[in-house]
Length: 66
Image (cartoon, rainbow, N blue to C red; front, side):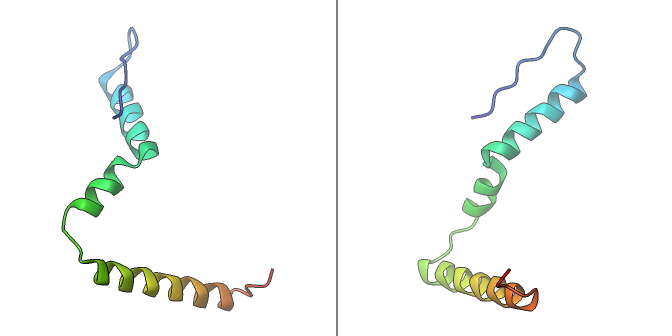
């Protein structure tokens, strides 16, 4: 859970900006998006495999043995 204490004389905008940054570091939004819809394990595995193939192809195009 992200917690931001407002400092004396700090504007709401800067405190909100710090809150958003702390949420991003904690990975809260990505976790919420991941849990928004249920994915069957087989579908999750297919997506993971596809992403790995894309990464490998991209790495090979860029000259992967660096």
